[in-house]
Length: 171
Image (cartoon, rainbow, N blue to C red):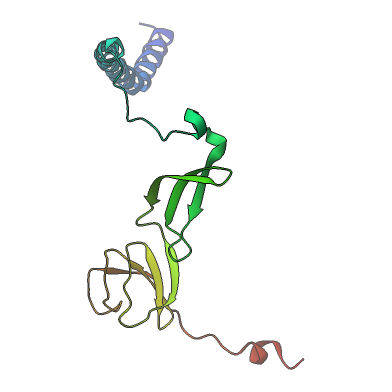
């Protein structure tokens, strides 16, 4: 064997070694793709069965004036003044108001200010105690920081800063 043949053999082995991980990755991706296609075929069959069924009618909506149905343009969302997480849905046509339901967005964060002893807090309420911010996890009247699992420390109070006039100087 010549030096050129030796060099060619080294190049072949180097390329083969460099491509081995990519070939293994390609084989794994091919296997995953085959499995995904099989699952997709099963989902298509199930969807075809659902689509072939007759639709199930929902409950009748509120009747409008003279038997006319309300339109989406007549739908109002009214936020409760004492609880911004409570929204009432209603249809309005002139003086006629027909309630359609309520949505209560539990767990949505709402800043309630400084914690008030004895006050009732709901999940998502945020309060401050001694400069730290606390998140309410479950309905409670407990004070944050007492070890109750109903509160989680969200932001811990930092150190007091230096007086800015000491840093900047007199104005």
